[in-house]
Length: 71
Image (spheres, rainbow, N blue to C red):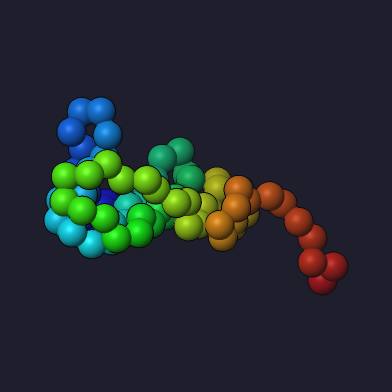
């Protein structure tokens, strides 16, 4: 799913002026992406905002890893 984005066969591009968002899910992995405000027709540079991997590890702005909080 996405907002303000289209794929031209080689790159994601802005539909209109403004920010864009994208969500992807495959093999139990969920990824959320954001892109700052851009101009219609220009290529989008995505930032990985959050990833939930198939083991339930959540990474916010980073690749998720398993960790122990000590509880």
